[in-house]
Image (cartoon, rainbow, N blue to C red; front, top):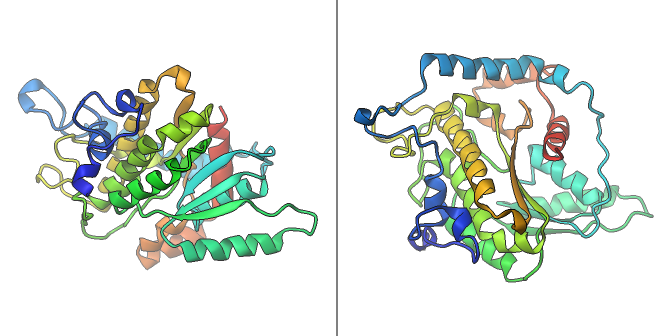
Length: 329
């Protein structure tokens, strides 16, 4: 089914998904990387970042780390949300980190929240906890749980089919879930893609494409892709997105940063190709450097370092507020 899935696209999304009439879904998403990589040397195309670009990218990462709290010091914390009654929002990765904070605050603001998660049991336990924290005069939380595993493109297709079958509007899709397997060896999904590239870019891109009919029904609607400043040190070779050719030695940080750059490029292209009258907007938002479960795969000494420098690193709630400010512009 995964092979067939790469040629699926939602009704009315042909122009938004890519130029190739024969390919859609994850294949179209894969082609949305920068055109500068993977081309023949004779055509003068770059195959990697130059030292100046690489240095500038790392300066951006370091600058974000040291100055993000100063840059966000004028923001209220917590930041109040307006009433969201009647607004349907899907949040992926809603059981931990930023996703958990996003889900909790959106639900408390009255939104119809869909927690799209790998572990439905954990999500239901969270809902029960949040409900118990409500006051007697508060309205019951309008939350449902749907299973979604981005490591499987079949799971993405089943999720989208289930939601679209309702013929209900979708107002916001927040692609929050992601992985950063720091220091781990290279791994591939059953669909044949490098894990970072699929989970952080291809699967969310496919989800957005397949949910486009529901997003159009809910227009004006929005797709929010949670990104990272690490995209500034990424480089996507369109002919070597799995980093298997030998031209680029695999490192976990490279797999992660490349996937985040691919997400930025795809978001830009997807936004431009959706007709303005459809009323669907796509944005990428970096929440800053946040202490989330991404750090769980770090070496123990680095995890300890994370905890010793809380001034510089946002907690998940602060990261959520910064993202909301970006997405409201």
